[in-house]
Length: 194
Image (cartoon, rainbow, N blue to C red; front, side, top):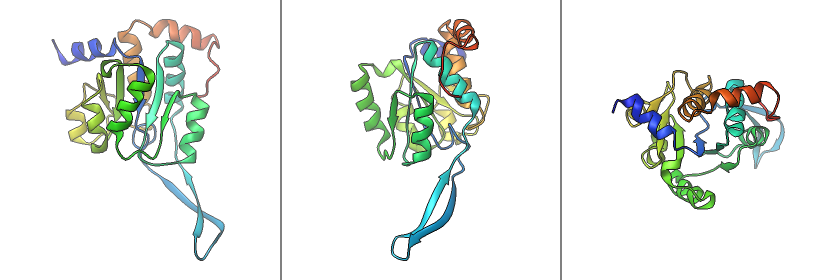
C-alpha cells in the first residue's frame, strides 16, 4: 500500500480531529504588547495577539457539518485561543498542557473513541507522542523535519496558512463527505465562524 493509500485508509476512520495551536492554527508567531497599567511588583500588563487563518475556520465548519468533532491540545494558555475556540465551536479544548499524550488519553475516554478514530495535527517535537499514538498523524508543511518524518500526511500549506483546512479536506474527501459538506456550507447550513 502506498503512503497516500495508507493515509486515506487512516483518514476514513476519523471522528475527531485535534490541533496543536502555535505553528498549526497560527504561523507560530506570538505577539506580546505591553499596555499601560500594572505595577512595579506585578510588572506590566501584556496583551497577546495571534493570527488565525479564515480558511482553517471554514474548514472546521465543514468538518462539523460532516459530523467530525474538532478540538485542540496546546501547551500555552491563552485567552486569544479560548476566544477563537469558542468562535469556531470546538468541542474539545485543552490549554496549558505539558503532557499532551496524557491529555490525548483523557480525551479518548471522555469522547468514547479509540486512538484509530482520532487525528492530530502538529508541527514540533512536543507533538510527537500524540502523533505516534493517534490513528492519523498530520504535519504542517513547515513542521520540523522529525515531525514530518513521523506523519502519515504532510499538508501542502504551512501552519496558519490553511494547513488545518488541508487536513480537513483530505479527511472529508477520504470519507466521501466533502461534496455534501461544501453544498451545506455554501447553502448557509452552518453558522460557525471562519
